[in-house]
Structure formats: C-alpha cells, structure tokens
Amino acid sequence: MSWASAWRLAVGTLTVIPVRPPSVVNRRVAGRAMLLAPVAVLPLAVLAAVLGRLAALTGWPSLLSGVVVVAVLALGTRALHMDGLADTVDGLGSGRVRERALEIMRRGDVGPMGVVALVLVLGAEAVAAGVLTSSWTGAALLAVVIAVSRTSLLLACRVGVPAARPDGLGATVAGSVQPALAAVSGLLSALVLVGTVTIVGRPWWIGALAVIIGGTVAYAMVRLALRRLGGITGDVLGAVVELTLLALLLVVTL
Image 1 (cartoon, rainbow, N blue to C red):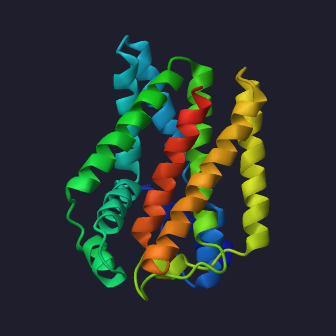
Image 2: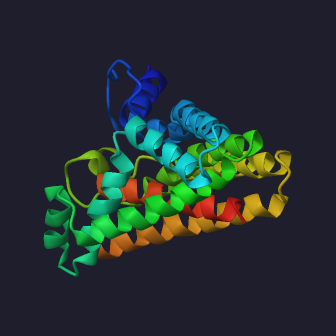
C-alpha cells in the first residue's frame, strides 16, 4: 500500500495527470514518491518530446519547437518547478536574512530577479530542446533527459537535509530518502541516460558528463539552500529540478 500511495503522491504532485489521492502520506511514502519521480514524469516527458518533434516536422524554426516542449512541461506540471525557481531566486537574491528570505519565497509574487531567471533558464531550455527535436532520436533523448532530471529530487530530499520551515512540501519530503536508495536510483538513471546517448549515436562521454554536471548543479543548489535558508522548501526543490534539467540539456546538445 505504501508503494501505491507513493506512486499516487509522485504523479499527483509532479504532474497534472489525474490520480486518486494517496491513502496515507508519511515519511516512508514521501521518500518512495521521490524515488518514483523520474518514472512518474516519464509520460509527460514523452508527450512533450513527441509534440516538439511534430512541431519541428511542420517546418517551424527549431526555437518554436523548443517553446512547444517548454510549454507542454509548464502545463503538465502546473509550472510547479518554474514557480519554485522564480521564488527561490527572489528569496536568495534578496540578500536578506533567513527569515526574510523565506517570507519573500512564501509570498509567491515574482520579482524582477525571478523574472530574469525564468526568461534566461526557460529560453535556454527552449533552444536546447529545439535542437533535440530536429530528429526522432533526439526527441527520444529529450524525453529521457526530462525524466532523469527529476532524479535530482533524491539528492535534495536525502536523509540529513532538513526542511527550512515546518510546513509545506519541503517539510513533507525533506530527509525522506535513504542515501543508499538515492545512490542506487541515481546510478540507474545515469546508466539509462548514458545508454540512451550512446544508442542515438552520440559519444557515451556526453552522457557521463551530463550526469556529472547535472549532479553538481543540484548539489550546489542544495548546499546554497542549507547555508542561506537552513534547509529546503518546495520552492528550492523546484529550482533544483529546473536547473538540473537545464544543465542536462546544455550538455547533451554539445
């Protein structure tokens, strides 16, 4: 039952795919939901990649095909991670003390720093996604990259990483993933990405480099949140996912 609840929690939180609410939500279920995150988002990733490829086949410029991918991800996730990125940049970029930074992030309105971050990150994602949608093999790689980017949640929610405040999504999932399980899941995701990169005809080291850089970006974001906020929040998790996705996309399009 805990795995079934974890699946419903992962799908219901990370996508707009309709599922029944989980029968129970505790730390064990939350940890398993984070483990299932890459699989839970895979249908949405495939849909975004396919629609981006179909847009490319119409003769649209590659950038517009990439915009289609980003738009599908935004709609399919309720822009959850994008909102988290904007709020996190506003909070951390304010230079205020911990309590004031958390208040800025909780408020939810987007300031100029958050707007600039969204424009730059989503613009770069659209350009990279547009490159990949120029072929069906590239679109397949794009779908895998989107799913693998959610593995960054394991790093952010591992045991030892506290929540910055006692309520919200961050408090539910913080410290819920055992390091051994996170390591195994991360390794499997890395192998899938490297294998996909190789299958579509790109050098295997591109996949390995993407894993290293993506993991480094996620780790650095978590460390920054720990130092400035004392822990993670739901917004920080969104920022971690969005920045990891950007890093992976930039590397696999080398």
